[in-house]
Length: 289
Image (cartoon, rainbow, N blue to C red; front, side, top):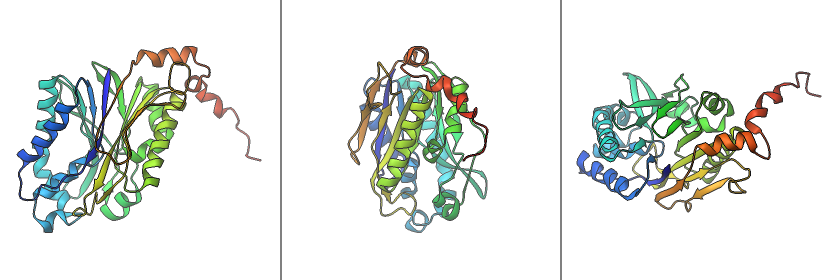
């Protein structure tokens, strides 16, 4: 399959309408020539808050409530594009109210001819937990698509190995990581996490990032990153495990062609067997000396 992973620039739609947002999304998707799976970044939807008045988009909490009115249009847009184009889309993430005061950072998956599905973020950053009051989800999921079994780790989730491990043990050969990081250190934490997950599970991992400044937004004011697709580090793959990577903070798609059959091959014939040998690390049960 051909994957397109976005380094996405947060826009500003003051005085505009949802149709202007739709036009931007359609331009992005049209430019993803030949891609069968499109990955957008975490919180890329927050640019929708700029459709409201400054007292709303300038507030961490008012924007969350206001954006719920746009959620049906957001989902309808991406489902229609997925149906019309015959592509699978991971639409970054959207803060969804599960109760009037409880929000989840939710990544929606859109497949042609199927109902939308989602993965909630499971581990919250300090900003999400302490300042924005976003709540963690609970369920770890994998998704069946016509392209194969895939899974989603939302940003910080990719820095913890057990989540991805449970997903690959359930059959996922591709982990998709929508991310939103403000500093280079934050970006590299997620990137290193992505590469570690690809290494230890001998699977593909794709990372998408928000990029650029949005000084109007208290949620996504600074954005640093570079979209990439990572692989196992073994024969038949790049020596550094980087199949494709964009330039830091440069908007655009990063493309890569992957064959999920290569995952089964490397797990059976690789120079090492990271995936198979995972349980062996637990044999040392004595105390640390």
